[in-house]
Each structure stands twice: as structure tokens, then as C-alpha cells.
Amino acid sequence: MQALVAPLRELAEFGEMKDAIRKKLTPVAVTGCVDSQKLHLVYGLAEGRKVKVIVTYSDLKAREMYEEYQFYDHNAYLYPAKDLIFFQADIHGNQLTRERVRTLRRILEGKPLTIITTYAALMTPQVMWDKKEDVIELFQGEELDYHAISRKLVDMGYEKVYQVEKPGQFSIRGGILDVFDLTEENPVRIELWGDEIDSIRSFDLLSQRSIERLESFSIYPASEFVLSDEGIRKGLAKIEKDARYQEKVFRDAHQPEEAQRILTQVRDLKEELEELRSYTNLESYIRYFYEDTLTLPGLLARTGESLVFFLDEPARLKEQGEAVELEFRESMEQRARKGYVLPGQMNVLYSAEQTAAELLRSPVVTLSALEARNGLFKAERRFDLETRSVSSYNNSFESLVRDLQMYKRKKYRVLLLSGSRTR
Image (tube, rainbow, N blue to C red; front, side, top):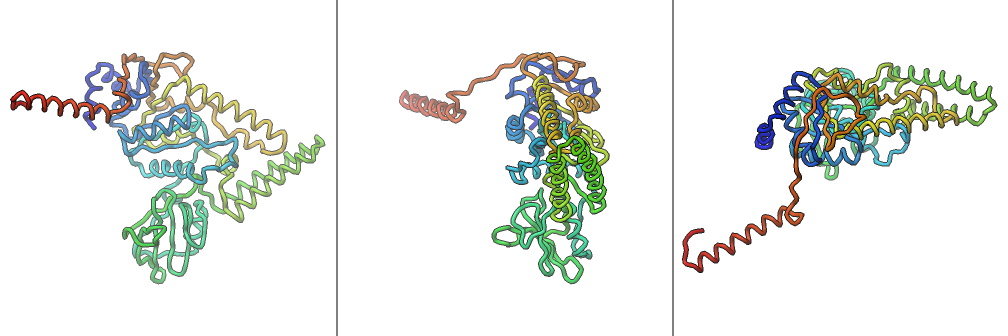
């Protein structure tokens, strides 16, 4: 991949940009980049950094950049935003949660990665797992307590079923424990001899045949939140206290329907958590269960890894952040008046300004096609690149190759007819 960076190194501005990032003379503003060149420049400027974050202005754009950037870096991970307004709508199943959990696992492991996300995702509250407390390490030959691990897996967001069929499930049958880690491609089967782990094997979900024998295996949470019985109890106590206060406010205002709605919401949530251990609708109640939350930039900064942020079109990022903030505030205010949400659910989102302040704790590079004002922050260094997009040949690289081959064959036939031996 060094061949891709070589042309960039010939640019005087490229060396100055890297120096500014290394010396933390940022934000560095780069203008004149079209979309096809941004990721190439990101790859070059991020060289030597263990953690890179590319931030764009829409989920669709983030997915496109993720697919393109995998050409440069196979350690690219997509981190989709959470929908804190329609948090009960789960049309994607656990796919979005799985993508976020894969990213969090990579962060916890301390391995190199490139995160591609949106500004809206940076504004949502984050909590980080504790590797000692929230990750289960299994080794062949060690003893295993079925009851303890079953309880722990439920706390980690796994669903107990008779037979695993999809990621995020586990089953216990006789002396066999099957776990389908949310971040893995295949489930794992742990077979016991008495209380001792006899074998650990990954297996195919359809055929049930073994794929690979393992000496050890790590099980990561199936949810972004890991809550113990005590943590759930304390959180629900805070929620019920707020609910009783809001019920009184509504009844004093002669709004019995809203008062009853508050109690119904809390009763349903309590049933989901205590009986079903479902964390699906827990996003908006996060302040009740965690005293300290972070933005994604704040979480990454705590890891102590070499980190750099690349912001795609900062003016549009600011527009997205302000739009998300306004929509969330108006939606929550309207729901609060109708008794659909509690006061603690209204201050979940971090503001666009708070998020920008967190970003400035790390090196930041902004990339834009045109110089735009009213961005997220004032740049310390500015670079204007002159670039051009090269149009494809008949919209197809294959057409160009095919025509060149045809031209060579025709030229060779002409030379043969003329009696020349030159090819």
C-alpha cells in the first residue's frame, strides 16, 4: 500500500499537514478535495496512527465511505448512529447493534482500527465495558459453573434459547454450552466433562458440524449495556421515583390520562428488564443506570491510543448536529407533555457544541470540496489543494482495457502483413 502514499509524499502540503497533526497544531482545514480523493488523503495522513475516525454527515454516506475505505484498510469498522427519537423502532433487528458492538470490542482489545461514523453518532452517550468484569474468558481444562455463566450471559444481553439460531443467543443442553457471540461469524460449542471444559469448537449453524478446535474463547457482550441485578434495581428505583413525581404533577394539573400513561410506561419497562432482560428500549433511560457517560470522542481519548479525527464537510456536519439536536428536543418536549417520557430521558443527547469541544482534545483534520464558513470550529492551519477528477473511459475501466488489447492485436496483424518482426 506504500505505492498509494508515494504520490502524496511528492506534495509539499502533505508533509506540512502531517507535521501539523504530529505537533497537534490542529484543526487542520484541507479544501479542494473531491469525494474520490478524500479517503486517499485520509489514508496517507493517518499513517502511523493506531485509531482513526472518519466522521461524515449521513448514515448513507458513512456506509458508502466504509465500503470504499476497506480497499485501503481492512481494519475499517462502521459505527451507525442510534435513533434516540424512535428508539422503539427496530426494523434492522440487531444488525446496527452488532456493528456498534463490533467496534466497541475492537476498542476494548486495543487493536488498530478505523471507525467510520456520523456526527449524530458522536452526540449519543456511550459507556465502555470493563474487560475484567464484562468479558467471559474460557480456557480448555478449566472448571465452569453452568449457573454462574448462564446468569452472566443474561446480564451481558444474551438470550437463552433451546437451540441457538442467530447471534446474541446461548443454550445449555446436558453437558454442552452453545454461544453465538454477537461479534463472531459462527457460534461456539463448549463441551464439559463433569465441571471441566473438555473442548471448545466453533461450528456451522446449519449443519452443526465443527469448523475449528480452539484452546480458548472470549465472549463479548451482546449489548452496549451490561447490567447486573443490582444495577437494574438501582436504575429502576430512580425511574420509579421520577415516575411518581411526574404522576403527581399530572394529577394536580387534572391530567389523569397522562398520569396513567407514565405509570404504564414504567411498568412495561420494569417487566422487560426484570423478567425478560430485554435492553431494547433502554437507550433513552441510560442516565438512570449510568452516572457517568461519554461521547465517542471522549471514550476514545480515554484509551490513550494515538488518535486522529477526519471530518468530512464540517459545514454539513454542523447542520446535521444542530438538526438532530433540534428534532430531539422538540420531540422530547412534546412527549413529556403527553406523559410518554420522564425528565431524565430529555437530557440524553449531547449538544453539537459539547461534541465539538470533545473533538478538539485530539488532532482534527477537516476535508471539504470548497472553503465554507460557519463550520464547527476555527482552523489553526489551512491548505488548499488543486485537484481534478479523471473521467472514466466510457464509464468503464474494463472497456478501456478491452480497447487497448484490441488495438494491440490490430497493430500486431498490420506488422505481420508488412513483414516486420517487431511486436
